[in-house]
Length: 376
Image (cartoon, rainbow, N blue to C red; front, side, top):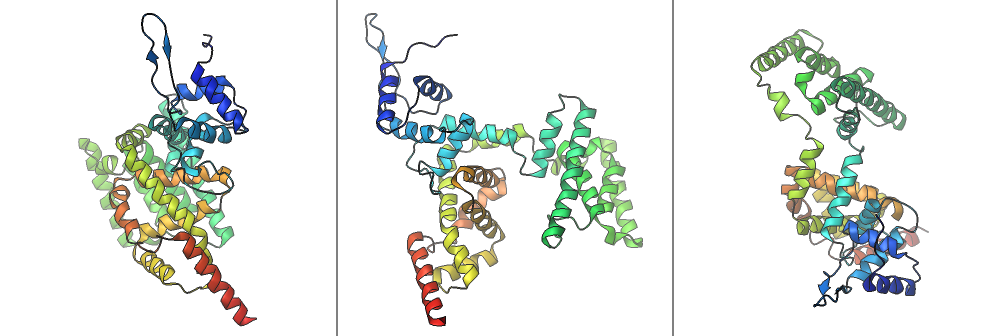
């Protein structure tokens, strides 16, 4: 169906963008409007069959300018919205777009688009593979197993190449990786689809240190408990440890107030902005009271340390890539009820060390230069 000719407001916005050196067609502006990405005043009737008119809102130009810069190179509009939401209009540096008032509808559509395609978490990648099977249970199982048995052995080999020690998130061996792959698929698709024997065997492979009489007793009891759960349809594992579906995760995000979503974004942006100075101070051993306070907090709070680590990773990305790491970090906080409920407490303990990030950066550089001069 053909679109109507551009309205006076759309033409006016196009002219304003052109004055900023941005060539944007009215058709693109129309697509932004229909997507819900532009703040737009409701059309007002002129009365007595004279039609209607619409006017630009004061914030419309700021949003349109940011979208225009984000879409200079062809990319999905959802991605452009997330770029603007997280990195703002200044694409030469990573800054939060707190001054770009994107409409809630567009941001939520962008986040839902990302969540449906996200493969950064192995469970999400397994779920995505299963969903691509077109509703066939056997094909879904095969696709999920293929992804899992590729991911965990790859993680083990990558860790060995980097000299990374095994731990909670890194397999101890290829046998452990194989067991974790099976366990991960069961977590996503449901343990009941595997049966007790397959689940116990996966755990056995992941824990070779229990290959003794005591371990045999443990696995026998575990198998019996799971068989009893399967028999009455009340398996604890199938209910408590199953990975929440995409629909569940989307619903959880929808229930989160937009204002809270933006506040979390702003706090994470603060952590990202502070990361270069903090990383420099850690590497060089620069002494600063705010840095010492942050390091003390990191040692005491595992979640705070994780947020700072991930923020530092995002800070190393180019602006064109930062949106993805930023989106993943936001969803990491918001997708877990526990992390979400403790987030304010976990970041508030950093106060007041990040009240003046520019000042912190200057102090770190000044003290680093002073140390270098004294050693010269």
